[in-house]
Image (cartoon, rainbow over all chains, first blue to last red):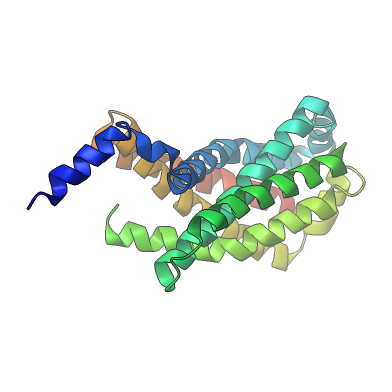
Length: 127
Length: 109
């Protein structure tokens, strides 16, 4: 049968990494990178909270540092990572466990859009 | 990722979905007048409910992140499957340890 060579010829005609233009591939990558970012952030988050072992003032001292605009911007970015990872993960759980295949691209785009809106709302609240 | 790790990954994800929603809601609530240690600790210190909430959150996050990091290390670095598993286990233990310490710090009266 010539199906496989025909398929690979069609793929190479679109470029060797044409899959990277697929919205669901991008969604998978966003899910992975956001998870990685959250994993890197978590130890620092825990270290900051543990400052309260040295008293309320120690934690307050750090919290004053978070008043800087650049830190607030970074916090907005973290909210985006958290929400986009949550919504992207929910989509994966639903696809794997329910008979849901339609509108995946739309769902992935909506996840990114909602995460961006929540992050902007959080930033507006902070500033 | 083998079936056992896959089930732990998805199980902790399902457990954390509502926890993350609550966490985001608390973040919005906590920042209504700027963050302060007195505000945060006033809510958590001596609270069994918040203690259980954050303990479950930390345990699930350590397992979930550990498995995710294992996959990324195996696929994106030259560590190999065994090296990735070892490094990811160490990272999961670090998260669990630091997380438990943070929960104790904010919950113990």
